[in-house]
Structures are given as structure tokens and as C-alpha cells.
Image 1 (spheres, rainbow, N blue to C red):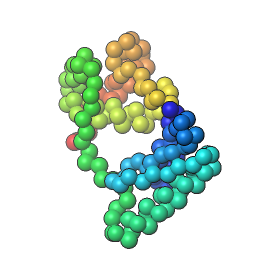
Image 2: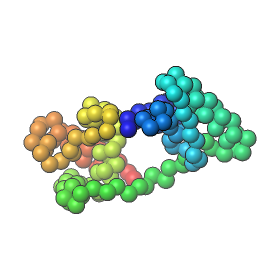
Image 3: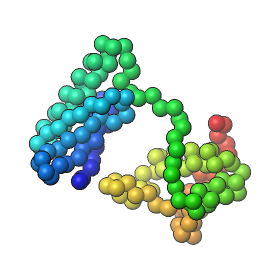
Amino acid sequence: MTKSTLSYKGFLGSVSYSAEDDLLYGKIEGVSDLVLYEGRSIEEIKKDFEEAVDEYITECEKMGKDPMRAYRGTFNVRVAPELHRQVAETAVSYGTSLNQFVSSALAYAISHPEIIESRRGIKVKKAHGALMNTAKTKSAVDTLASSARHKAY
């Protein structure tokens, strides 16, 4: 299965392909409801996605509901125990909390897309470990730590 995304009016939509059905399909991401769309071609799925977004916005307006899902600002992340230890130790060594360090790391990754190795599969380079030997990574970690120390959460 291949995955990609569509964007329209601030909404993000997934795109997957079913070889069995010879069909492109997806759902609007970041909303509280399940909104699906499909198409047999790129043009069809784009059109159906845009129609689904427009219809969803209209329905939300009728109900007086915000169409975008509300995010609380907290979520659980599962990582390998060794990575957890390394991140916690790095945060302490820079005088910041684990939450502040991870928040800064995520903000840094979002603002520096070059650290993303591949848009397909979204493989992010290791933030610590073997890459710590490079000056660029040390600089990035220093920037993250400095940012985490100076932010009030």
C-alpha cells in the first residue's frame, strides 16, 4: 500500500491505494468525525476530497461545531528503553525537563525539514546515538537544549 496526502482549505487528507479494488481512497485527518472519499484516478480523488471537505465544513457550520479536532497538547510516545534513557540523560545534562527537551526537539524537526530522510515512510534521523559524533548534530542538540531551557511551559 502506498500512502500520500492531499491538502485543501487547511485540511489534510490521506491517500491510499487498494490494488484489490483498483481504487484510491482516503479520509480527512485532524477532524473528530470519519469523513471518507475515493476515486479511480488522481483527478477523481482530488475532486472527491475537496467536495468532502466542503460538505464537512457546511455540516459543521449547520451544527455550530468547529470542524478541526481540538488537540490537548499531550500525547504518549513509545520509544525504545535505551532511547528513553538517552533522551532523559541529555535533557538533564542541559538543565531542562524531558518534556521541554522533547517539545523543543519536535518544534526543531518541524522547522527543519531537511532532517527528514524520506517523505515516504517518514524516517527521521536518530537524534542521539551514532549521529552525536557529527558537529552538525551536536549543534542541533545544543540548539534544542538551549531552546528548551529558555521556554516557559
